[in-house]
Amino acid sequence: MCKSEIFFRLLSLTEQETEVTRDRILGDYKDMEATDARYVLVTLLTEKGLYPDQIATFLHRTARGVRHLMRRNITSPMVFICHRSGSAWEAMRRTAGDRLVCLQYGQVVTGT
Image 1: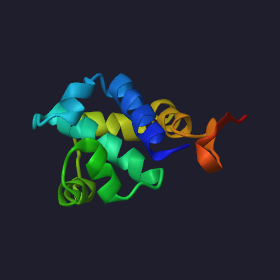
Image 2: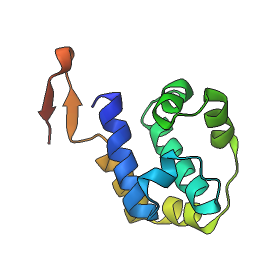
Image 3: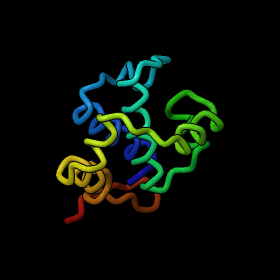
Image 4: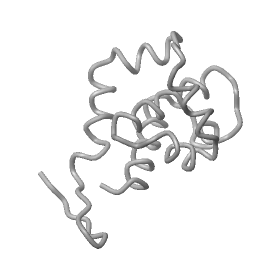
C-alpha cells in the first residue's frame, strides 16, 4: 500500500473509532479529544513504517511536533481504550494495509 493510501485509511479508521472528525484531527485543535485522536493516528502511522517527516507532511505539522507527540506518555481514557480494546486497535492495525499491496509503477492489487 502506498503512503498516502495508508494515511487516508488510518485517518478514516481513527475518525470512526475515536469519533473525532477529520477536521479536528488535522486542524489546530488542542483539546484533549483531538490531541488523543492525533496521537492514535501518529502511533498507527509509525507502526506502519512512516517516518516523522512523512507524517508531518500529511498532518500539516512540523516533524519536531510529530516527534514530540510520539514521545508523550498520554494516559487519557480514549488512548487507553484504543490501545487496550483488542478488537478496535487490532482491527485498525490490520485494516491499515494488509489487503492492498502497491507494486512497481503504482499498480494496486487486492491481496487475501
